[in-house]
Length: 194
Image (cartoon, rainbow, N blue to C red; front, side):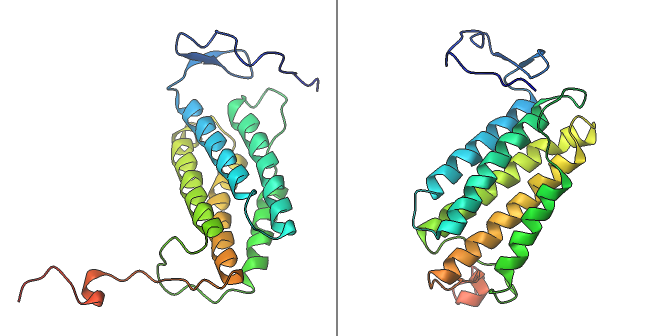
């Protein structure tokens, strides 16, 4: 497959609110597929920020691998199935699952809802998780119409789980305890009147 090189950042062709897909077709920038692709791009940018922070080298490398896979995911979602582009494979889903299993070995079982937060690195990974979930929500109508491959959708689903587990692991490694959600009744300042 011949690689396309970007010679110019601006083209002016999107000035009318449309953008071109890999197959050459034009869609509105408000198209559901563009919402998914834009959200994946947002997630990738946030992971770039996370990689600038204090994380072990193997985690940095893992996140770089993930950023590259997000470009593959974008190509997969942005192109009809009859167009030759890199595609998310079941091995990519299995990679996420294996990484989660590794991190979970050093974490206790999750018994309660936990508050996002802790270290800066983990907090941003929790934020990344919510962006991955948003991409998944945007992709759901496309999956229902069979406009995207189920493997790509499964990858999106596992991705948010992976980011959640990684955030927990980072907090564990940095010595931050997981604060459980305390509902108003449990905190002693409920809204009920005596």
